[in-house]
Structure formats: C-alpha cells, structure tokens
Length: 108
Length: 306
Ligand code: FES
Ligand SMILES: [Fe+2]
Image 1 (cartoon, protein in one colour):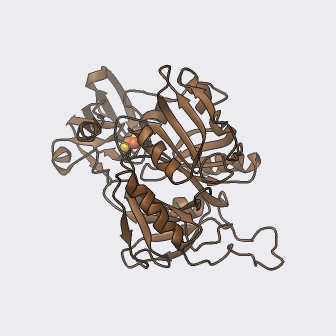
Image 2 (cartoon, each protein chain N blue to C red; image 1 turned 180 degrees about the horizontal axis):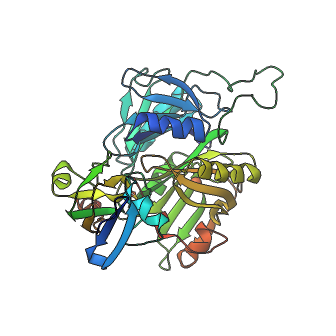
Image 3 (tube, chains in turn brown, orange; image 1 turned 90 degrees about the vertical axis):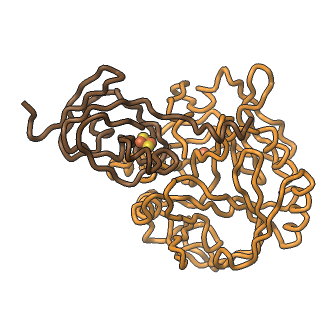
C-alpha cells in the first residue's frame, strides 16, 4: 500500500526502485536517500544531466532550460529531475541527456 | 595589456528566475546591486571594482552566458583591435554607446568557439563601494555573504581552441597555462591580459558556446572555507571543494546558481609576466591539473554546463 508521505520512484532503464518524501524535488530527494539512478549535475534546471522521461504518474515542474526540454518534449513527459516534484508514485527512464547535435554538426 | 586590453570588464549571465538569481549573487556571493534597466536586467559589482557594474543578470528560458566584455585602455584601442580581429576573418559589430547603460560603444564579435566577446573602453566609474578614494578605510561595513571582491574570470567550453588562441593572441593576451593531449593538441587554454594567471580560460568540448563558470575573487583561504560554510547554511547546490587547482594553483570552491550556472570563488594563484614560459599540463594528468588534492575529475566538471 502506498505510504501517504512518500512516493515510490521506479527507474526502469536502471532497474532501481526507491522512495522519496512527498513534496520534495526528485533529484535532491534521491541524493538524500543515497540513490544514484539519475545523473546529478547543477541541480538547477540548467545543465540537462538529470533529464528523465516520465512513463507513468503525476508530477509538477518548475521552469526548466529550453535548451534541454522543449515544449513538445515536456508534453511527452520529458523533464529535468531537479525541477520535478512527484505528486504520486512515478515510473520513469533516466539517462536522456544528450549533447546538442545541431551544434556538433556546426562544429565539424 | 600588450595591446591595450586591461581586464575582464563584464559578463552577462542568463537565469531562469531573476529574484532567485539576485539572491544568489547578492546575498550569497556578496556582490552589490548597482542598477536595473527597462528590460529588467540587474547590474552588479564586487565591492573593490571601480566601474559601475561587472555582472549583468538577464532572465531567459535557457541559462548560460550571453557575452563577456573586456575593458581596454582607451577608445582608439577599440578601433585598432577591431581592425586586427577583422583581419582574422571574424566579423566585428560596433554597438553604440548607451546600449548597455553607462557604457561606451562596444566592439562585439563571435569567437571560433561560438562565444560572444566584446571590447569597450568607457564605463561610468562609481569607485570602490563603501570606501572613499581619499584615505580609504580597509574595507566597507555591510558586505554580505562571501563578500566577493571582484568578478575575476570565466571558464568556457568550446570546440575550436586553436582558433581562439589565435584570436586572443591577436588581442595581446598571453598563454599562461595550457593542457596538451599526447598528439600535442590543445585541450585547455588559460589566457591573460594582465599579471593574473588567467582572465579567460577555455576547455575543449564538442559543442560550441558552453558556459562553465564565472569566478569571483576572495582574499584568503579562510574566506574560501567560510564560503563553503555559507553554501551549506543556504542549502546551495555544491559542485566540489574547497580544494586547490593544479592549473593556476588557485584555492577554490565551485557551486551552482539557482538556474544551474556554475559559480566559483577562489583565492591565490600564480602570476604571469609576458616573458614567462607557458606552463604545460598533460591531459593524462588532467585530474591533478583540475583538482590537485583528489587528483581525479568529478564527472560533473566536464559535463555540467549551461
Ligand atoms: S542537474 Fe542540471 S538540469 Fe538537473
Ligand atoms: Fe575559475
């Protein structure tokens, strides 16, 4: 049975499951319970390292860098874990960070 | 100074939330707010800086750096240096005086790594904050947080370091330190227009135009430890430190602003005269070059960028 005060986070690509207190930003809550299923960078919605795709569950997000989460992506469930507050148990994929390909092509 | 560039003069940083950012740069780092403009940008400076501002915060959808400006000795130097930059095949745009408040005309161009730089020679001087320039006291009362003394340098990530080296040598900068890979390619450049070990630095990276950090100067190692205490007290996102860099030998701590832009406060470090030989670090020893004590890179140092 789901605990009222915690959310269960299942990170499917890493086969890891952990619980975080309700109402806290996911990435920092994960760090507090000493889990490592999502990459940790700036913790401020800027670097994109903590990019995830939420497959199931409800959540809220604070403003995130458009360079890493476009409006279309946000609509598809992509988010930055450091700006995401779970509102229920979540099932998600981590490791969605990518270098910006267009810029790499430009650089070649 | 060889060709008239004096110092890093300003940096414009994009943030996701202006109020949170002002809190970080003013309450925590200890910069002084000296103005706002009608676009909502906020202007800040370290208390020892004589010009009106050195850090500009702009709210935007994507954090990072808009541009960094260097102050030159006089207006004539701007024209000479603009001509030299154009000779490299780089386009230079002249932005009229007043576009940035209280600042003269700026010569702006995009470096081979994709970063925007500018040169200017005139900005309103309000003097050091809180002390007189006649019989000045040692320091002003009322400083906040880390009490940063000045904006010191930026470290930027980009692809074409050879191109940037050529550009900055054209501007009269010296190469104080470098990192070389086994084939002799440049993996990092620490460039200076002054006696400081670096005024601007670049690390090789696949993408263009990435921002690694803006750095602010503190006087002592004790101040760096106190900065670390404040980072914990304010629950600020820590990157790494306090520690020492191999490169430049500065004593440092890295942390992040609320939009994910990295900040540094540091003290100490080597010095550079134009007759100094460039210091070389080998990329095989990059861990020690960056973090002298642990001798290993944290992954974040290379990947967390805005
Ligand atoms: S950790 Fe940098 S965006 Fe989340
Ligand atoms: Fe630095």
